[in-house]
Image 1 (spheres, rainbow, N blue to C red):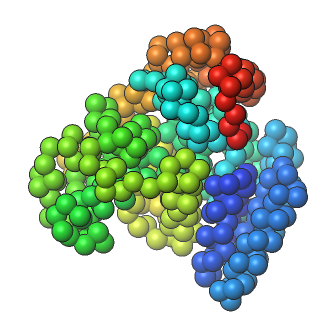
Image 2: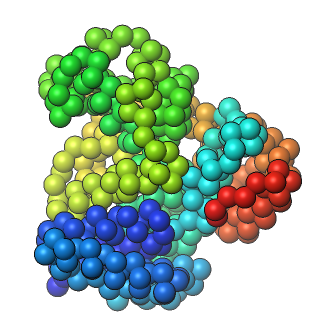
Image 3: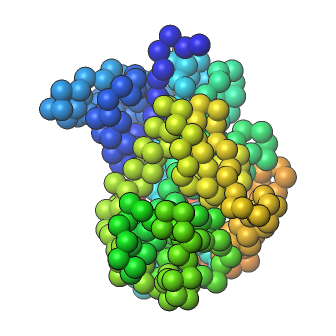
Length: 384
């Protein structure tokens, strides 16, 4: 038993800065510890959270620690000292929205068919792998909620026995689109609409933005309470095509509030041991996202009636190829699709097409340097 239940946020950038503001406004949330390499930044964010919560007459204990994830031994020591029941990873070497900030014609050179976010795996794997090494070394019993491309990084780390408990966002972000579209199309209160969905990051990215992407395998049933109303929605291609009309919201950085809400939901379900049914990516290191129940026991996958885990996972093994991932090998190596490898070679002049846990930091530094050269060639600047 811990004397105090603590939530530790590691990497408090834009996304987890919003999460911090959500958490500190929730009654009885416990103690929050914010960890980042930039002391001035996190000191200011902690003060902002304390100030804002005070207007609601809430005064959670929020402290901060300076942490360099590249120093695994020191990070493990700090984690052992804090002993949090939940660690949220917000660290990455390039935010997911950066490529989306490019002009459409330049973006199209990078975000091609069967390339997607997978080509940028090297940016997301290094820091969460260092964090999971530190968690393992710390010896504490904790749950890790990972925001860094969990559809892939959680899976890679699971192969070597370091899987985070659960991911966030990605396919679950399209569920509100589905609920709102079904509610408006059938004149049913949105609160009554339930969704049973197995999908990948690819589906959210394409369904939400363009109403396309039903070519990649998925499973979807929609309910009004306990009544299956999926067939009343018409063809799935047409229904998915209608999602942007019903649910369009700010994309990229403007959508961070919704992404942070998905983290918030997962943290609350684990912290308060709710066993509530939701949906999130990479439970138990699985590819893609599944219906799950989260609690202090971890993540329990709740499959649709009559479906086996092998069948569900088979859908996601196919779907991940549309997002640039050919396979994730037994040693954690991430093999990119031929299309993703070709994009890296042609546009960024990167020669490798396999991202490894061991080499991912060096690969990320190379990819960043080549990406900056690409931006310069196209006379484009984006926030990094």
